[in-house]
Image 1 (cartoon, rainbow, N blue to C red):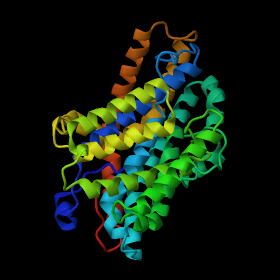
Image 2: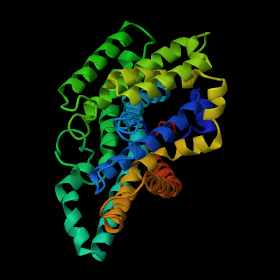
Image 3: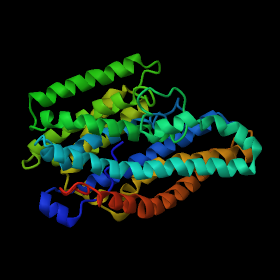
Image 4: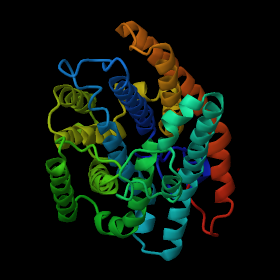
Length: 387
């Protein structure tokens, strides 16, 4: 998932001549909410009622929600190349160190906070109920804690779900960021044969992942999560090469229709449960058209509520399991036979999202930004871009 969640300062924009692409910010927020709804639906399916929000025989819009993580990975490659591409192309060790420190200071403080926050929830509820402790202690093994602590949860070390599971994608991004130091200088040369070659390798790799998955999809997390991220990150790097090539010329991708078609195509493929890799093609179109658009989609994506949602999207994503587990505990106690009626389910979802967004705002303001700034004061001498 891309978690480049802080806007560049005006001074950074002036010094580095990096254009902030505001239309991409709300896409992160909307994707994060979609992932939360997907996990909410999954919890309902595993719970007493055994029914989700929508029948999978009717639509797979929610059932394919895991693919919004793939959207994040594509977006990650695009944004990282936009912000760091030219500097990393210099192949300078100091630049690489600054880049990694910037990414670490962005990702790790909230990752650690969410891990400890979830454990505090477990300790609190366990102190109130011995039954809760017995039912949930297996989800918090000591060994797994250290795997999560050192960002190893997406590399096949673990086989069972535990701790703050959604953070597997953060670990996958971290290792991909390291590999990107060597890949970006090769790809960041504009739309060329190199771009198409890496696209081909990545697409073949993703098709292979789908083929070898018994479920026939890209829903890899603990096992090949890093590989899934790497392939899609590379595709995102390629999308950025196209962006550079067409941004100063007249192109279909700047039109409102390019954005509408890309969004509608994504919707149809998700709804009909068509091949995951094809969905990524339309996701790529959404990113490219949104980054270039100056028409109605631009105005819609720049409204304050959507921008706000994008700003706090990292917290929304990483804190979701805290609220999902709390909700699941409430459900097991009060609705042992399942929740009656779709309206009740939707009301529960609305309450959960409201609580999560409030929590995410507070965490964004008092954890994400302060700790990022604190760590970046300890950075190497060369200035690091706050993206």
